[in-house]
Amino acid sequence: MKTGIIILAAGSSSRLGRPKQLLDYKGKTLLQTVINEALETNCKPVIVVLGANAEEIAAQHQNDQVSFVINESWGNGMASSIAAGLSAMIKNNSATESIIIAVADQIFVKMSNFNNLIEKQRETGKNIIASAYTETIGTPVLFKKDYFEALLSLEGAEGAKNILKQYPQDVETVVFERGGIDIDTETDYNNLISQQ
Image (cartoon, rainbow, N blue to C red; front, side, top):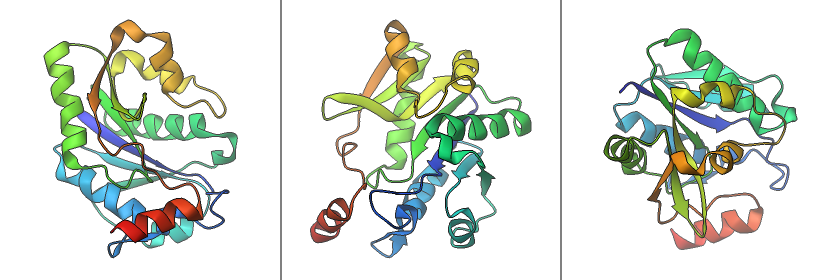
């Protein structure tokens, strides 16, 4: 199964007040940490969707194994970034059978989290495999191409979670133990740094 990874990194980090994609964790940016884990998998291509502060972020993450897509409409919300990444994926990789959507601030994501989604898909035959943590399900999440149209038609601040709610019978989950830890505020970041 040909699977690509789309990393959403277009937001303006309004609650943090500076680009969280560039925050340092163990000598790497948050975004670089997620990119590195994605590149450890056999998934190709790895696409990073940028929006706010795109030039600054792209300049610090040059990598010939990663494609950067600029979502000019990033201010409209997450749906536009999913559409931008998926459109680029389909256009340049018509053989793609499934995608994994990841986000730039789940700092504890590992290659194994991505691979577990693919394994679970093979085992169950379900077309949506989500990560389960802290009483919710979310990213990283795998969608088979049956759902590409639905993803492209999401609107506004709507993330892919809406599709998970609409088709519960086609959803399986894998546990992502520290998936609930993401960085939205200065407090989140300080907590992260104090634990390293």
